[in-house]
Length: 271
Image (tube, rainbow, N blue to C red; front, side):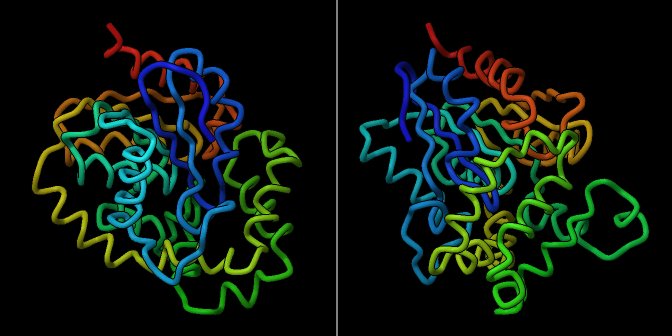
């Protein structure tokens, strides 16, 4: 999906979403930016190859897409796994990325595994990432969820929100349509099965500080300020904004506020 005009801005979705996750934000941001919101490899209506679901390969996908669209330099924003991929783009192609927005994610090797561990504190929290280990297991998630995509994704996504009503029927239909297509579930879970590759990538990337300004956006009812700490490991110019009465799906729960925060940040480079 592309829309609008102005400086190019890439929006990267998370799991199990597609470009449609951003559909409430795109009309607001496209007033000032050329918005590019792709389906990430294996998601939505994209191809589902056997491999290449690690942060480095998907970062290369994004960079190649922007080259094909004629954008040498661009800003990039992501939430959930889209934020991890956006970080991968910025770390792999720092000369091309003007600004980075990182939202509601923990980078593999820097907290994702800790928050997914079976501990009393995690279970009692509102952000226990139990699914990370489950999705990593070969074949079993596909076996247990296939044919039950609707009840699984709808229940899981609503449980991660402050306002479950933000997960509307059109969103559920999109996720179910794409994840139930041939290879749809496998592609989603391959992202998690690349965790140890991603840990090694982060170790290498974090040795070099990001040169661009970084905006971290957190929700007060899910990952919150941890996103700021994630980016302070790897960048010096890090700003943080927290959305109130918001859960993990910020672009669906607080689209106007998110668009305003992101728009002001990315517009700082517009002469």
